[in-house]
Image (cartoon, rainbow, N blue to C red; front, side, top):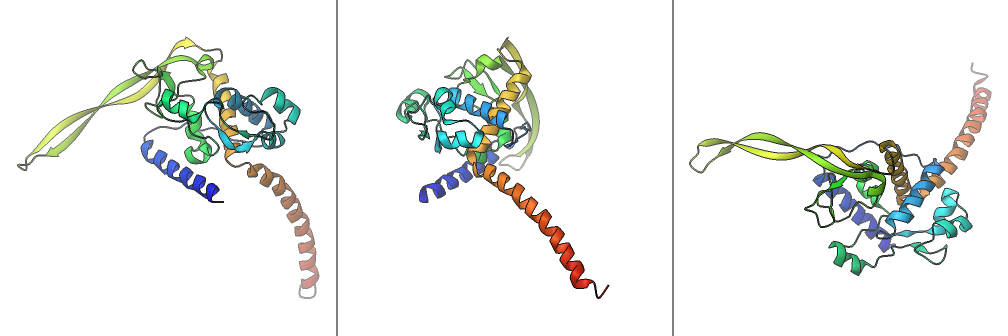
Length: 259
């Protein structure tokens, strides 16, 4: 229980930090639909094949994910069980955290609660905002998360892009020690657009749809109980609809002598 509370606290702190440091970043909307099983299944495939090498989802088990997404244990073993031996194992990363610190300077975070900490729009925009940067140790940078240690693992799908920045000048009036006011001009580089240097194996629309599926899966990962609530909600609405009929008939019976 203490472990779960600690995770929730860290997620809340991360969310507040992101809200403060990325206030000026424009996030793109993304359609999240946890009833879309094909989308969730494709997102799971992308996550296991491209994310799980470095990032864990250590609070989810393969067989639980399979049951929720309509994937049998046999298919999980054949297609998704690359980083574990048993279908009941937790989804832990292949890369040891100690090695990751040496290679990237920091250990890649666990992604179980990333959608709740960062919000779906942040993830969707982040995965579509990588660009080539020769000054970065990994050769990549990101407009949503500047100087990110993570390389663009899906660059073959999206292709190589470069970011174009424009210079914005802003005038500020500064009061000096003697009381006089001086106007100073500051220049800030602001992201303008991306330019495609080399095409990827996917079109822009196909890549966006793949990132939507990945984001959809990460939203599920952060709160699997939503799927259970959706199923229960259907039965609750059916019950309320039937109950409304009997309640109306009962009301008419009680009030028939008055009306």
